[in-house]
Image 1 (cartoon, rainbow, N blue to C red):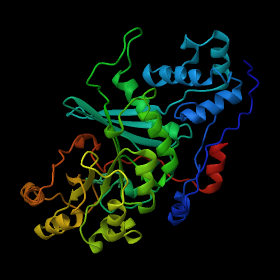
Image 2 (tube, rainbow, N blue to C red; image 1 turned 180 degrees about the horizontal axis):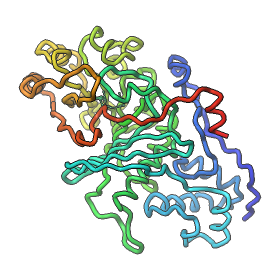
Image 3 (cartoon, protein in one colour; image 1 turned 45 degrees about the horizontal axis):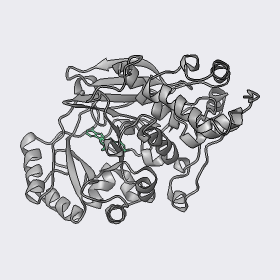
Image 4 (cartoon, helix red, strand yellow; image 1 turned 90 degrees about the vertical axis):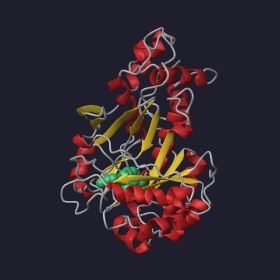
Length: 404
Ligand code: SAH
Protein backbone atom coordinates (compact mmCIF):
# COMPACT_ATOMS: atom_id res chain seq x y z
CA UNK A 1 0.00 0.00 0.00
CA UNK A 2 1.45 3.33 -0.93
CA UNK A 3 0.71 6.44 0.97
CA UNK A 4 2.00 8.79 -1.69
CA UNK A 5 -1.15 10.77 -1.62
CA UNK A 6 -0.37 14.32 -0.65
CA UNK A 7 -2.61 16.55 -2.71
CA UNK A 8 -5.58 14.33 -3.34
CA UNK A 9 -7.89 16.15 -5.67
CA UNK A 10 -11.20 14.45 -5.47
CA UNK A 11 -13.98 16.79 -6.36
CA UNK A 12 -17.68 16.11 -6.01
CA UNK A 13 -19.21 15.32 -9.33
CA UNK A 14 -21.53 18.14 -10.28
CA UNK A 15 -24.52 17.28 -12.38
CA UNK A 16 -25.96 20.01 -14.48
CA UNK A 17 -29.61 19.36 -14.81
CA UNK A 18 -31.43 21.51 -17.35
CA UNK A 19 -34.00 22.19 -14.64
CA UNK A 20 -31.19 23.66 -12.61
CA UNK A 21 -31.07 26.72 -14.82
CA UNK A 22 -34.40 27.80 -13.46
CA UNK A 23 -33.03 28.05 -9.94
CA UNK A 24 -31.69 31.33 -8.56
CA UNK A 25 -28.04 31.66 -9.54
CA UNK A 26 -26.65 31.17 -6.03
CA UNK A 27 -28.76 28.06 -5.45
CA UNK A 28 -27.90 26.08 -8.58
CA UNK A 29 -26.36 22.67 -8.01
CA UNK A 30 -22.69 23.39 -7.68
CA UNK A 31 -20.26 22.77 -4.87
CA UNK A 32 -20.19 26.41 -3.73
CA UNK A 33 -19.30 25.28 -0.22
CA UNK A 34 -16.10 24.38 1.55
CA UNK A 35 -15.62 20.84 0.31
CA UNK A 36 -12.81 19.22 2.22
CA UNK A 37 -11.50 16.20 0.31
CA UNK A 38 -9.58 15.03 3.37
CA UNK A 39 -12.65 14.81 5.63
CA UNK A 40 -14.17 11.40 4.98
CA UNK A 41 -17.42 12.03 6.87
CA UNK A 42 -20.37 12.26 4.49
CA UNK A 43 -18.57 11.02 1.40
CA UNK A 44 -20.70 8.62 -0.61
CA UNK A 45 -19.48 5.08 -1.16
CA UNK A 46 -18.32 5.99 -4.67
CA UNK A 47 -16.50 9.10 -3.49
CA UNK A 48 -14.81 7.23 -0.65
CA UNK A 49 -13.87 4.41 -3.00
CA UNK A 50 -12.26 6.87 -5.41
CA UNK A 51 -10.40 8.58 -2.58
CA UNK A 52 -9.05 5.30 -1.21
CA UNK A 53 -7.97 4.11 -4.66
CA UNK A 54 -6.14 7.36 -5.26
CA UNK A 55 -4.58 6.89 -1.85
CA UNK A 56 -3.10 3.65 -3.09
CA UNK A 57 -5.49 1.10 -1.61
CA UNK A 58 -5.37 -2.26 -3.38
CA UNK A 59 -8.19 -2.22 -5.98
CA UNK A 60 -9.16 -5.78 -5.03
CA UNK A 61 -9.66 -4.75 -1.42
CA UNK A 62 -11.08 -1.29 -1.80
CA UNK A 63 -14.76 -2.22 -1.46
CA UNK A 64 -13.99 -4.12 1.73
CA UNK A 65 -12.03 -1.14 3.09
CA UNK A 66 -14.94 1.20 2.35
CA UNK A 67 -17.30 -1.15 4.19
CA UNK A 68 -14.92 -1.47 7.14
CA UNK A 69 -14.40 2.26 7.53
CA UNK A 70 -18.15 2.91 7.18
CA UNK A 71 -18.97 0.35 9.85
CA UNK A 72 -16.53 1.95 12.29
CA UNK A 73 -17.76 5.44 11.59
CA UNK A 74 -21.50 5.07 11.10
CA UNK A 75 -22.33 1.97 13.08
CA UNK A 76 -19.85 2.19 15.95
CA UNK A 77 -19.35 5.94 16.19
CA UNK A 78 -15.55 5.82 15.85
CA UNK A 79 -13.77 8.90 14.63
CA UNK A 80 -10.20 7.77 15.21
CA UNK A 81 -8.58 5.70 12.47
CA UNK A 82 -6.15 4.25 14.99
CA UNK A 83 -8.99 2.46 16.77
CA UNK A 84 -10.14 0.62 13.60
CA UNK A 85 -8.61 -2.65 14.64
CA UNK A 86 -9.57 -4.74 11.61
CA UNK A 87 -7.37 -2.54 9.39
CA UNK A 88 -3.63 -3.23 9.24
CA UNK A 89 -1.69 -1.02 11.63
CA UNK A 90 0.33 0.74 8.87
CA UNK A 91 -2.80 1.41 6.86
CA UNK A 92 -4.54 2.88 9.91
CA UNK A 93 -1.59 5.15 10.60
CA UNK A 94 -1.43 6.25 6.98
CA UNK A 95 -5.15 7.03 6.98
CA UNK A 96 -4.80 9.02 10.19
CA UNK A 97 -1.92 10.99 8.71
CA UNK A 98 -3.81 11.97 5.58
CA UNK A 99 -7.48 12.11 6.38
CA UNK A 100 -9.87 13.45 8.98
CA UNK A 101 -13.20 12.30 10.38
CA UNK A 102 -14.49 15.68 11.43
CA UNK A 103 -18.02 16.64 12.46
CA UNK A 104 -19.56 19.95 13.58
CA UNK A 105 -18.74 20.92 17.15
CA UNK A 106 -21.53 21.20 19.69
CA UNK A 107 -21.25 24.75 20.95
CA UNK A 108 -24.50 25.01 22.88
CA UNK A 109 -27.33 22.71 23.93
CA UNK A 110 -30.70 23.42 25.51
CA UNK A 111 -33.14 20.83 26.77
CA UNK A 112 -36.85 21.60 26.89
CA UNK A 113 -39.20 20.54 29.68
CA UNK A 114 -40.70 18.11 27.13
CA UNK A 115 -37.30 16.49 26.45
CA UNK A 116 -36.70 18.20 23.11
CA UNK A 117 -33.03 19.08 22.63
CA UNK A 118 -31.84 22.03 20.60
CA UNK A 119 -28.24 21.95 19.48
CA UNK A 120 -26.18 24.80 18.14
CA UNK A 121 -23.34 23.40 16.06
CA UNK A 122 -20.25 25.30 15.00
CA UNK A 123 -18.90 24.44 11.56
CA UNK A 124 -15.23 24.41 10.54
CA UNK A 125 -15.47 27.91 9.04
CA UNK A 126 -17.09 29.37 12.17
CA UNK A 127 -20.67 29.43 10.84
CA UNK A 128 -23.36 27.91 13.02
CA UNK A 129 -26.52 25.88 12.46
CA UNK A 130 -29.26 24.56 14.69
CA UNK A 131 -30.48 20.98 14.89
CA UNK A 132 -33.38 19.71 17.02
CA UNK A 133 -33.94 16.28 18.56
CA UNK A 134 -37.57 15.43 19.38
CA UNK A 135 -38.07 12.30 21.51
CA UNK A 136 -41.36 10.46 21.24
CA UNK A 137 -42.97 7.23 22.34
CA UNK A 138 -40.99 4.48 20.58
CA UNK A 139 -39.14 6.84 18.28
CA UNK A 140 -37.01 9.94 18.11
CA UNK A 141 -36.77 12.44 15.29
CA UNK A 142 -33.82 14.59 14.39
CA UNK A 143 -34.68 17.79 12.54
CA UNK A 144 -31.58 18.73 10.55
CA UNK A 145 -30.51 21.83 8.66
CA UNK A 146 -29.41 21.93 5.02
CA UNK A 147 -28.18 25.52 4.77
CA UNK A 148 -26.80 28.22 7.04
CA UNK A 149 -29.70 30.66 6.98
CA UNK A 150 -32.33 30.54 4.24
CA UNK A 151 -33.10 32.46 1.07
CA UNK A 152 -36.85 31.85 1.01
CA UNK A 153 -38.10 34.65 3.29
CA UNK A 154 -41.33 32.93 4.30
CA UNK A 155 -43.07 35.70 6.21
CA UNK A 156 -44.02 33.60 9.27
CA UNK A 157 -40.67 31.80 9.71
CA UNK A 158 -37.94 33.09 12.00
CA UNK A 159 -35.18 31.40 9.98
CA UNK A 160 -36.41 33.48 7.03
CA UNK A 161 -35.28 36.64 8.81
CA UNK A 162 -31.70 35.37 8.59
CA UNK A 163 -30.12 35.66 5.14
CA UNK A 164 -28.84 32.54 3.47
CA UNK A 165 -25.12 32.32 4.19
CA UNK A 166 -24.17 29.11 2.39
CA UNK A 167 -25.09 25.53 1.63
CA UNK A 168 -24.00 22.85 4.06
CA UNK A 169 -21.68 20.16 2.74
CA UNK A 170 -22.74 16.54 2.79
CA UNK A 171 -20.25 16.11 5.61
CA UNK A 172 -21.90 18.82 7.69
CA UNK A 173 -25.35 17.34 7.08
CA UNK A 174 -24.30 13.81 8.07
CA UNK A 175 -22.22 15.32 10.89
CA UNK A 176 -25.35 16.70 12.57
CA UNK A 177 -26.68 13.15 12.85
CA UNK A 178 -23.41 11.78 14.24
CA UNK A 179 -23.11 14.65 16.72
CA UNK A 180 -26.68 14.09 17.94
CA UNK A 181 -25.92 10.38 18.38
CA UNK A 182 -22.85 11.34 20.41
CA UNK A 183 -24.98 13.52 22.64
CA UNK A 184 -27.63 10.82 23.05
CA UNK A 185 -24.93 8.24 23.71
CA UNK A 186 -26.50 6.04 21.07
CA UNK A 187 -23.54 3.96 19.96
CA UNK A 188 -23.14 0.26 20.68
CA UNK A 189 -20.76 -0.62 23.50
CA UNK A 190 -17.67 -2.50 22.29
CA UNK A 191 -18.56 -6.12 21.64
CA UNK A 192 -22.30 -5.42 21.97
CA UNK A 193 -24.23 -5.28 18.72
CA UNK A 194 -26.65 -4.16 17.42
CA UNK A 195 -28.29 -1.07 18.89
CA UNK A 196 -31.37 -1.72 21.01
CA UNK A 197 -34.74 -1.17 19.35
CA UNK A 198 -36.48 1.25 19.32
CA UNK A 199 -33.64 3.51 18.48
CA UNK A 200 -33.44 6.87 20.21
CA UNK A 201 -32.70 8.48 16.85
CA UNK A 202 -34.97 6.63 14.44
CA UNK A 203 -36.23 9.30 12.05
CA UNK A 204 -34.82 12.28 10.21
CA UNK A 205 -36.66 15.30 8.91
CA UNK A 206 -34.97 17.86 6.68
CA UNK A 207 -37.02 20.61 8.28
CA UNK A 208 -34.37 22.68 10.01
CA UNK A 209 -32.72 25.75 8.58
CA UNK A 210 -32.62 26.14 4.82
CA UNK A 211 -34.24 24.79 1.69
CA UNK A 212 -32.93 21.27 0.99
CA UNK A 213 -33.81 21.35 -2.71
CA UNK A 214 -31.61 24.43 -3.14
CA UNK A 215 -28.71 22.27 -1.92
CA UNK A 216 -29.66 19.18 -3.87
CA UNK A 217 -26.36 17.38 -4.46
CA UNK A 218 -25.12 17.65 -0.89
CA UNK A 219 -28.49 16.65 0.58
CA UNK A 220 -28.69 13.68 -1.79
CA UNK A 221 -25.18 12.50 -0.92
CA UNK A 222 -25.82 12.88 2.81
CA UNK A 223 -29.09 10.95 2.62
CA UNK A 224 -27.35 8.18 0.65
CA UNK A 225 -25.01 7.74 3.60
CA UNK A 226 -27.94 7.89 6.02
CA UNK A 227 -29.96 5.27 4.12
CA UNK A 228 -27.19 2.79 3.29
CA UNK A 229 -27.35 -0.36 5.37
CA UNK A 230 -23.61 -0.10 6.03
CA UNK A 231 -24.00 3.61 6.68
CA UNK A 232 -26.46 4.98 9.22
CA UNK A 233 -28.95 2.37 8.11
CA UNK A 234 -32.12 4.45 8.32
CA UNK A 235 -34.92 3.29 6.07
CA UNK A 236 -35.91 5.75 3.33
CA UNK A 237 -39.39 5.82 4.82
CA UNK A 238 -37.97 7.23 8.05
CA UNK A 239 -36.49 10.24 6.29
CA UNK A 240 -38.65 13.18 5.22
CA UNK A 241 -37.43 15.99 3.02
CA UNK A 242 -39.48 19.14 3.30
CA UNK A 243 -39.54 21.74 0.54
CA UNK A 244 -41.34 25.03 0.13
CA UNK A 245 -41.83 24.00 -3.50
CA UNK A 246 -38.68 24.13 -5.63
CA UNK A 247 -40.64 22.62 -8.50
CA UNK A 248 -37.80 21.81 -10.95
CA UNK A 249 -36.08 19.62 -8.35
CA UNK A 250 -39.08 17.69 -7.00
CA UNK A 251 -39.00 14.94 -9.62
CA UNK A 252 -35.27 14.43 -9.12
CA UNK A 253 -35.75 14.25 -5.36
CA UNK A 254 -38.10 11.30 -5.92
CA UNK A 255 -35.77 9.57 -8.36
CA UNK A 256 -32.35 10.26 -6.87
CA UNK A 257 -33.09 10.35 -3.13
CA UNK A 258 -36.35 8.46 -2.74
CA UNK A 259 -37.12 9.48 0.82
CA UNK A 260 -40.51 10.83 1.87
CA UNK A 261 -41.60 14.22 0.63
CA UNK A 262 -43.26 17.02 2.58
CA UNK A 263 -44.51 20.23 1.03
CA UNK A 264 -44.80 23.45 3.00
CA UNK A 265 -48.12 24.48 1.52
CA UNK A 266 -49.66 26.88 4.04
CA UNK A 267 -52.21 28.48 1.70
CA UNK A 268 -54.87 27.56 -0.81
CA UNK A 269 -54.79 30.59 -3.09
CA UNK A 270 -51.85 32.10 -4.95
CA UNK A 271 -52.71 35.46 -3.49
CA UNK A 272 -52.16 34.31 0.11
CA UNK A 273 -49.32 31.90 -0.69
CA UNK A 274 -47.44 34.68 -2.53
CA UNK A 275 -47.40 36.51 0.81
CA UNK A 276 -46.60 33.59 3.09
CA UNK A 277 -44.23 31.55 0.91
CA UNK A 278 -42.79 33.99 -1.66
CA UNK A 279 -41.28 31.18 -3.75
CA UNK A 280 -44.90 30.77 -4.90
CA UNK A 281 -44.42 33.82 -7.12
CA UNK A 282 -41.93 31.78 -9.13
CA UNK A 283 -43.71 28.40 -8.98
CA UNK A 284 -47.38 28.88 -8.23
CA UNK A 285 -49.91 26.38 -6.90
CA UNK A 286 -50.84 25.05 -10.32
CA UNK A 287 -47.20 24.40 -11.25
CA UNK A 288 -46.51 22.88 -7.84
CA UNK A 289 -49.47 20.50 -8.00
CA UNK A 290 -48.62 19.45 -11.56
CA UNK A 291 -45.17 18.43 -10.28
CA UNK A 292 -46.72 16.53 -7.36
CA UNK A 293 -49.07 14.57 -9.61
CA UNK A 294 -45.98 13.68 -11.63
CA UNK A 295 -43.95 12.67 -8.55
CA UNK A 296 -42.31 9.31 -9.28
CA UNK A 297 -42.88 7.79 -5.84
CA UNK A 298 -46.56 8.49 -5.33
CA UNK A 299 -48.39 5.68 -3.61
CA UNK A 300 -50.44 5.05 -0.50
CA UNK A 301 -47.32 3.76 1.21
CA UNK A 302 -45.42 6.89 0.19
CA UNK A 303 -47.97 9.57 0.79
CA UNK A 304 -46.93 13.20 0.45
CA UNK A 305 -47.22 15.22 3.64
CA UNK A 306 -48.57 18.74 3.34
CA UNK A 307 -47.52 21.09 6.12
CA UNK A 308 -50.04 23.79 6.85
CA UNK A 309 -49.27 26.40 9.49
CA UNK A 310 -52.41 27.68 11.21
CA UNK A 311 -52.38 31.49 11.22
CA UNK A 312 -55.37 33.24 12.79
CA UNK A 313 -57.45 35.09 10.22
CA UNK A 314 -54.96 34.45 7.40
CA UNK A 315 -55.37 30.90 6.10
CA UNK A 316 -57.63 29.14 8.61
CA UNK A 317 -61.19 29.71 7.38
CA UNK A 318 -63.75 27.08 6.47
CA UNK A 319 -63.43 28.23 2.85
CA UNK A 320 -59.65 27.58 3.05
CA UNK A 321 -60.25 24.05 4.32
CA UNK A 322 -62.69 23.35 1.48
CA UNK A 323 -60.32 24.78 -1.13
CA UNK A 324 -57.54 22.62 0.35
CA UNK A 325 -59.65 19.50 -0.12
CA UNK A 326 -60.11 20.41 -3.79
CA UNK A 327 -56.43 21.17 -4.32
CA UNK A 328 -55.18 17.85 -2.98
CA UNK A 329 -57.83 15.70 -4.63
CA UNK A 330 -56.29 12.66 -6.32
CA UNK A 331 -52.99 12.79 -4.42
CA UNK A 332 -52.17 10.14 -1.81
CA UNK A 333 -51.38 12.51 1.06
CA UNK A 334 -51.93 13.63 4.62
CA UNK A 335 -52.01 17.13 6.04
CA UNK A 336 -50.02 18.11 9.11
CA UNK A 337 -51.66 21.10 10.73
CA UNK A 338 -49.00 23.11 12.57
CA UNK A 339 -50.20 25.59 15.17
CA UNK A 340 -48.13 28.73 14.47
CA UNK A 341 -45.12 28.97 16.77
CA UNK A 342 -44.73 32.49 17.95
CA UNK A 343 -41.60 34.62 17.67
CA UNK A 344 -41.48 38.26 18.60
CA UNK A 345 -41.94 40.64 15.71
CA UNK A 346 -43.66 38.06 13.49
CA UNK A 347 -46.98 39.93 13.32
CA UNK A 348 -48.91 36.62 13.22
CA UNK A 349 -51.04 34.85 15.80
CA UNK A 350 -51.79 31.16 16.22
CA UNK A 351 -55.32 30.11 15.22
CA UNK A 352 -57.46 29.31 18.28
CA UNK A 353 -57.74 25.57 19.08
CA UNK A 354 -61.42 25.38 18.11
CA UNK A 355 -60.60 26.84 14.65
CA UNK A 356 -57.79 24.33 14.16
CA UNK A 357 -60.09 21.45 15.15
CA UNK A 358 -62.87 22.69 12.84
CA UNK A 359 -60.32 22.91 9.99
CA UNK A 360 -59.05 19.40 10.72
CA UNK A 361 -62.66 18.16 10.85
CA UNK A 362 -63.36 19.31 7.30
CA UNK A 363 -60.26 17.53 6.02
CA UNK A 364 -61.04 14.36 7.94
CA UNK A 365 -64.65 14.29 6.75
CA UNK A 366 -63.26 14.31 3.23
CA UNK A 367 -61.17 11.25 4.03
CA UNK A 368 -57.78 12.80 4.75
CA UNK A 369 -55.60 12.24 7.79
CA UNK A 370 -55.08 15.66 9.34
CA UNK A 371 -53.11 15.37 12.57
CA UNK A 372 -52.56 18.54 14.57
CA UNK A 373 -48.90 18.77 15.46
CA UNK A 374 -48.19 19.23 19.14
CA UNK A 375 -45.69 22.05 19.42
CA UNK A 376 -42.45 20.71 20.91
CA UNK A 377 -39.59 22.58 22.51
CA UNK A 378 -41.34 25.95 22.45
CA UNK A 379 -39.76 26.97 25.77
CA UNK A 380 -36.30 26.75 24.18
CA UNK A 381 -37.33 28.20 20.78
CA UNK A 382 -36.82 24.82 19.12
CA UNK A 383 -40.27 24.45 17.54
CA UNK A 384 -40.90 24.60 13.77
CA UNK A 385 -39.79 27.89 12.31
CA UNK A 386 -38.08 29.09 15.48
CA UNK A 387 -34.52 28.24 14.42
CA UNK A 388 -32.01 30.94 13.77
CA UNK A 389 -28.23 31.19 14.20
CA UNK A 390 -26.15 34.33 14.44
CA UNK A 391 -24.17 33.51 11.29
CA UNK A 392 -24.21 36.29 8.75
CA UNK A 393 -23.09 36.41 5.17
CA UNK A 394 -19.77 38.19 5.04
CA UNK A 395 -18.82 40.48 2.18
CA UNK A 396 -17.01 38.56 -0.58
CA UNK A 397 -13.49 39.73 0.44
CA UNK A 398 -13.91 38.63 4.05
CA UNK A 399 -15.44 35.31 2.96
CA UNK A 400 -12.33 34.59 0.92
CA UNK A 401 -10.11 35.48 3.87
CA UNK A 402 -12.00 33.14 6.20
CA UNK A 403 -11.95 30.18 3.83
CA UNK A 404 -8.15 30.30 3.30
N1 SAH B 1 -37.42 25.18 3.50
C1 SAH B 1 -38.05 23.91 3.75
C2 SAH B 1 -37.55 23.28 5.01
C3 SAH B 1 -37.96 24.00 6.28
S1 SAH B 1 -39.18 23.04 7.05
C4 SAH B 1 -39.56 24.09 3.76
O1 SAH B 1 -40.01 25.23 3.71
O2 SAH B 1 -40.28 23.11 3.74
C5 SAH B 1 -39.76 24.02 8.33
C6 SAH B 1 -41.27 23.90 8.45
O3 SAH B 1 -41.73 24.71 9.54
C7 SAH B 1 -41.93 24.43 7.22
O4 SAH B 1 -43.10 23.75 6.91
C8 SAH B 1 -42.24 25.82 7.64
O5 SAH B 1 -43.18 26.41 6.82
C9 SAH B 1 -42.70 25.60 9.08
N2 SAH B 1 -42.65 26.82 9.89
C10 SAH B 1 -41.83 27.86 9.69
N3 SAH B 1 -42.06 28.82 10.64
C11 SAH B 1 -43.04 28.34 11.42
C12 SAH B 1 -43.68 28.84 12.60
N4 SAH B 1 -43.34 30.01 13.11
N5 SAH B 1 -44.63 28.10 13.16
C13 SAH B 1 -44.94 26.87 12.64
N6 SAH B 1 -44.36 26.35 11.56
C14 SAH B 1 -43.41 27.07 10.95
